[in-house]
Length: 232
Length: 232
DNA sequence: CGCTATGTTGATCCATATCAATAAGTGTGG
DNA sequence: CCACACTTATTGATATGGATCAACATAGCG
Image (cartoon, rainbow over all chains, first blue to last red; front, side, top):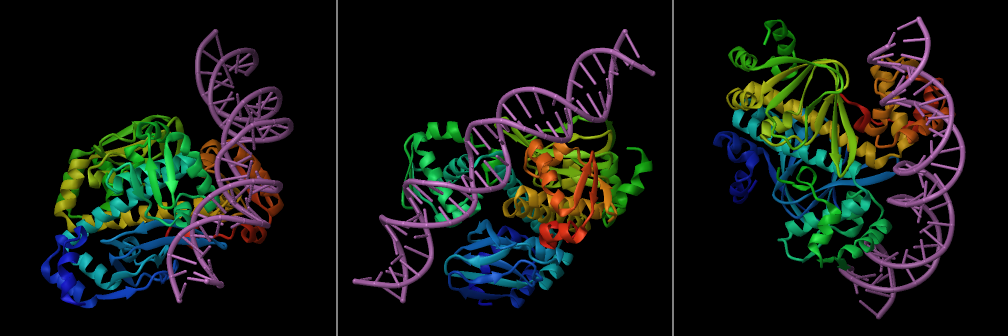
């Protein structure tokens, strides 16, 4: 792999603390690849041959069953994905496809498990990352089971606003089709849900959202750090 | 803590590989407690002061939002719970209450984090455990988003059958009320869903389930290891 | 500039929730 | 040990959220 990428990878929490020799060993076996949009990277059920690190672009994690499909998460740079399968040497539970043109580092899972066994600092970093992933899915589970689709959308809008810098107007960063899937609804229903937020001062033009009455929306959405804060 | 419990705790994957001195250190700070049924152990949002290890009984992990409540999982002996919050030193995302009379070991989170930082073997065990928890929630997420409630129940019945030994007749081990919540439906709907499985040869008398036509039920349920196998 | 995928809107259907009443357990104290 | 209270489970009637189907609009994109 070209050494240009070393510093930015090394800067990731996952790799920051590990021994230099181990990092070098991982990098030697790794390689970078560029993918166009809409390319299937991995399929659920396959053995987890590589740990993936997304350097640029974005990736959709999704799953299928019985002819249905749902989006579970979106990966944005710079972060790793499918770490749990790599560590457990188990088949992927989710499939992944690029959403945009993406640059991805592939690190052989075997190497990752090898270093994991000999580098305590790396093992600890993996723990921290996994714990975060785990907590993130639990939050998403609570979101799904405790809220109606309108409430999920309202809270998504508030989260996205914060991510986009906090201004009253901002852009969605999901295609609406996928957003619907992530939120556990159909595209038609998402369209209507956006209309359903109008009484709370939310307007939509294309991908642009404007929140006219922030307190009113928050009164309805009741955002909760134990569901909506991605940091904690 | 009474030393009688040491061997069975030490036998847990989580503690099996760690250095004896570190194990002793953890145990010195820990204590066992007996709880009657229906006792709140922890509440979401609280700081994670203790790692819990369930020795006997059973514990419900649940969450609340805006006056609603949902069960997320059931803990059965012998396993730890709320490990992720302990490791990240973050507030609990779920609340926990005993379902039956339960015996629980409480290990101060601070001690766990301390040993975690100095014992690589323990850190690796924590990783393995967390990765499994993570994968388990992802499966549950797929179950919820990709299946109807009838399909979820059908697959639950098959999973429970396997857990109970594989015979055609077996007992539910959840109160139906809670099972409904775990499966993401109302108790009324669960009642009707059981009726809805009759055409596939499932009969219910109280907590006793009988599967009269296994292949037929499986044809409908379409169980999938990437959703229903708790081991992988 | 037209083609194709995405998004919107309307009409309808279906799954599931809600509300209400009853039945069946389960536990408690007299 | 039984009667009462209380919780849980079932059943029925109805409401509603959300899905589906179909038509149309719109926006990217070659």
